[in-house]
Image (cartoon, rainbow over all chains, first blue to last red; front, side):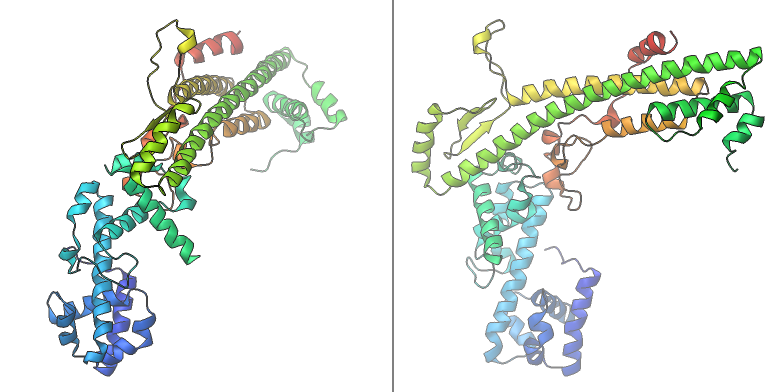
Length: 183
Length: 275
């Protein structure tokens, strides 16, 4: 799996989490800290940090809990961090696949289990393979309503990624529902 | 170097400096600018050409001024022809844009209906409706496909059944637009080269040529989507995948790729400038 790109912003955020940990030497304090709870992308940074620290690949929430040495009452938070982090990496892999010229049938081969995700998961914007593919298409092909007049039509985009038109319509609807809800 | 004042040029300038000042003043007056010379200065300058050589130079520049002014008028006319073609092309592009948006609007509604019902509905209504310059088709999932690029199936001479696609019409207008731009840049280049060859370097005329040229180089439409000169749909957010289909939409002539036509250039030089 492709390693998450570590730009300077990523490094800074990793450092923020690291500094809270180094100050307290207790992951349960980190998981309850404002730095962790309020920082965008903190779940991914946490997993990346633990993986680097232990030179291992984390494959389950249970394993993460063991490495963090936190009590059972924080397991939901640990599981959530594990799911969100994997989901973001899965979404990113789908978007990269679209950008590098893959077709819809290729996206179907990128399955959630390769990112340690179950068939269905909770707590993220998308909850399964199909809805994540729609999100990746919607975001990568900029199907936001505001941009649509400046971008290619859905018909030609469907042809470009060799997807049924209904997939593009689903992606279009999905991303715009998200924007409408947000507004 | 500081520019000489008009009175100094009138009193002690070379014949070339004096004629240039005179023509510059005439040019400004012709194109509604603030005159450089007062009436008195203008008369003094006119009366300063006395020797045969000076009179010869005066006559030559008088002729050049006439030729170049006529040429500038021609170039202005050609500019309006180019802009008219731009406007025509923009109109067709907006029709295309509206067709694409209509397809999305109709399909967004159809998307709310389950597939079997959708196919039944679109199959029924498709025969009752048509959209100008498009073929309305139903895809395998029951969505509308407003096709703007299809062959004209009518036989040659069968005028009643000719059906042209929007793409065909846009390409025709594009070709016409390109021809008018090529004529413009060829005439313009002939004029610029002629002025250079004759040493006719008059600020007002140079600025006028620049203004006319700038107007022709303005984008035909405000969206990069249709501009051939733009390789991306979005300037700030480049996307290789989306830009892979950019060439389908890049329909405006790319002025950077249009070159001077030697025949037009030579004919214009011969018939209008060196006549």
